[in-house]
Image (cartoon, rainbow, N blue to C red; front, top):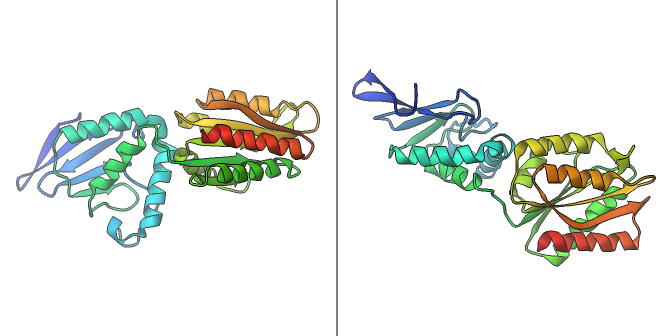
Length: 272
């Protein structure tokens, strides 16, 4: 089957097929039922979220939309160019859609095209006026820098939302959803054996896989010996597609006043 193929199922109704390769599996396909105007969208427009009453208008709206954007941010972001193209293709078919029935998550029956519009928006290098600070720490020195950077961002740009997360204490998908929403991030790790903490390294691998675009980044961290951690962070973030600013905070042992001044420079660079 390919996009536009159909099967007559009787009573004047047809199943019309729409290929959706890599959204998010190679064999993904949506099916449209004429007459009832239902789009069975497979994984697209879904959530990892169980709605007891089944339908989007019965769900807690805050939770529904948070789960919807989390699903997109953590799974579909790498395929955003395909998402944009596919939505435009579906719109070109001019099919009336009264219900979008996903393979998991809520069934969109109240204004079902609202989720399609959101996907289209999310597919275009989405970001809000938000900065997320992400870190892990050994002896709380890197934690102190993280909180100082967050405080400076809030002081310099009061309208910018600031989120701060310890990688070891927060679900990686929750953090990545905030990164998806953000125009910039600051990432911190102490230096460990000439590199970074394994928790931060693993998180960076996930970050690279998601292929975020048009976002700034800054690096920070503490060290006791060589201090290579910030260099590693800078290289890994650049490799993941982030525009890494020159300003950084690099503290020998625990941060001192001069290091906190560097935190202010980071905040200003990310807010510009």
